[in-house]
Amino acid sequence: AEYGAMRPPVGLLAQIASAVSRSFRKAFQEEYLAAKQDPEKWMKATSISRNFGNMTFDEAKKILDVEDVDDKEALEAKVERLLQMNDKKDPKNKGCGSKYIQDKVLNAKERIEFELEQRQEKRAEG
Image 1 (tube, one colour):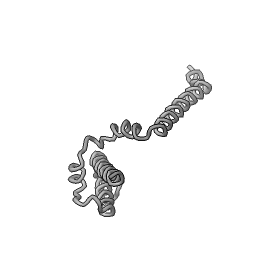
Image 2 (spheres, rainbow, N blue to C red; image 1 turned 45 degrees about the horizontal axis):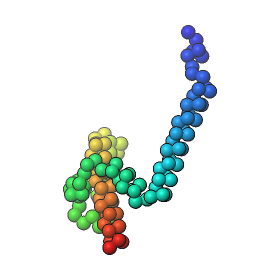
Image 3 (tube, rainbow, N blue to C red; image 1 turned 60 degrees about the vertical axis):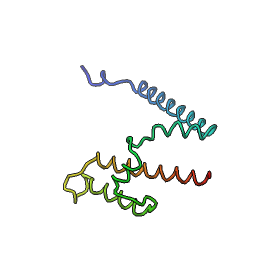
Image 4 (cartoon, one colour; image 1 turned 180 degrees about the vertical axis):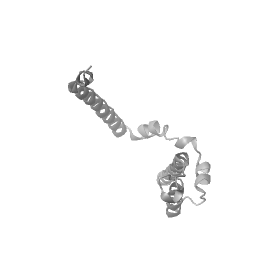
């Protein structure tokens, strides 16, 4: 069997790539239009998937070991330090680190940021 005989036709690959591209473009356009037509409904629908690893606000504060979540500089410094401490590629860590812990740290950061956004929106409304 010759190598060229097993190679898929270039035209077929181009058709597949084009179809996938069209599908993504159409899905993006539909989401954009939905968000534009009814932003509140869209936010509620998309916030369901923002569960931050099923983490509560209190758990997020414990993971990052912070009490004052309004001090954004301290929060960011804590996140950066925890991410660096668990980075396997960092030479200081000598190959030790945990992607799992990094993910938990990022989920905690996002959960706290989400809570702060919600508080800010409530203040703006009330």
